[in-house]
Figure 1 (cartoon, rainbow, N blue to C red):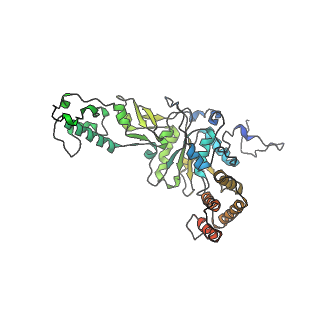
Figure 2: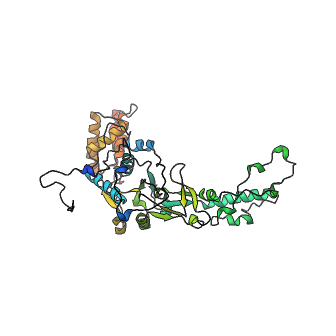
Figure 3: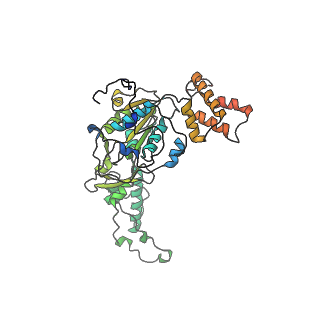
Length: 414
């Protein structure tokens, strides 16, 4: 095992080493039958070990419906086929705990790779961060609803004024609520008492609300109610097993985003300043996460992972990424799918095909060679229309197919 330099994988006697020993990810896209396969992953390299705590022991939420929509039924008889390069690079990213950049033309299944990895390894719902030209690092980490908190403070101020029998100002929060601004601690906030709402038949009774002390709110819950972790922020929560994070369409990102991500990828942690400022009074704050109805407790305003997430970054290759960013990631370029892979994709979504399907795939590949790579979604849509009982007739089929298989670069009619 000492000599593992760049060489032909075939041994001197002509045999080829069995890659299954380290191919934890096989590229089938099928869920594990027993324990999650991620349990077979060896410990990370020393420089990629993180000590986030306390661990979140609850399993990651599942989203089987999304897996089925993306990949087809889990028990489908058709087995997805992955290239050796795909299996090698995905497993290398798993072993090294490094993000994986997946490049290739639009529509060839780059995003689906993240779902395939998550379902096959039993890692639960995929966290998806869709990138736009205005996306910032903070968008992926967390959001703080300062406006919502100010509005809540104003509502409490109005209730206090009513309880004290004072005139209610319509210009905003009272002076007593000034310390309930987004930058202040939440102790000054109060929660209305449901018992203070008088019944209609007690309108003439004396109002003793101003004589009663207002209930003190739970400051921890109150502050955390306005903080929502983003996909990246949720992926970095301390768990014994990694989450899968899809950073989709990275080509659209501002030039600074790649550089901003370096520290997070290298350190596996980030801070939430709004919580760090009050850590002496509120060391533990429960916040919302990117999972549906999900919550997590943040300690001292710091989030640090225990298992670095499986990060899949998709790109169409339209932008040159900074060398420092590439150095911290692995790179996989997916080629356009061949006839066998296209047939497997169609079978996963539309069951077994007929002779017409084979002809359609052959024509699709021929069109791709002459006009540029078409998206697999274009083939999937055309096969669905071809096989549906209420689909187009033979007279309109050729014209419809020509329109469905238009070039994706917008040049000409395809």
